[in-house]
Image (cartoon, rainbow, N blue to C red; front, side, top):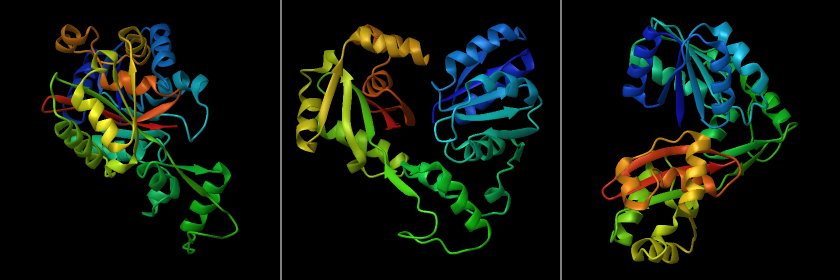
Length: 296
């Protein structure tokens, strides 16, 4: 999950840095200029998988209200008080995995996790949370509520039938790849396989590879795509830079010197689809970087 941590004060910025260091996340310090904060929220809502605000919950509600669309597509939204005492799951607790992120951050900073979704309060699983974890899209949306209600009542849920039928549709997993010149296909394969293992998925879930066009003749990368029977898409530096700017991706000076653009794996993967969520942000292995996206 790729997260943005947004703070409004100096104390909040310190906590944001602490959260980033412990669980990851890109920090944004905007001060108490609410017009600038509103602009930032408009820019990052839907571009990050999770938004973590360090401020009052009321401010967050007002800022995100114009951008909320649907429980199946909205990002996770969390609120943390400036003293780091409470971490609140505010939006998209299940599909967006805000509840999981709330627990993770609360443990990291020794805070109290505040989760209000009924299934979690009762200590039961929810079908939409399980689907999100497995890279499945639950449809139709109306059936999610009916099935979760049945789970709360203690009723049995069957895989094939019932009054409410919920389809769990597999999402395509896209691997964006960056690699040093001369990296073997085996090393690239092992990096992608390890990346998939980090999200508890087999490498067979990967349906598409992507990289920068400077790697078009990289033997290890091209031969790997052929061996796996996968299409590999290459994108220009300009195309990658557009995604870097749009998604506020972090850039590497070393990568910029090497291929002319500061982020390859995340940007290339994003170039493949109109809508996606990060299964795994940019992760470095020996000579290889991999980012994994679920196509929405």
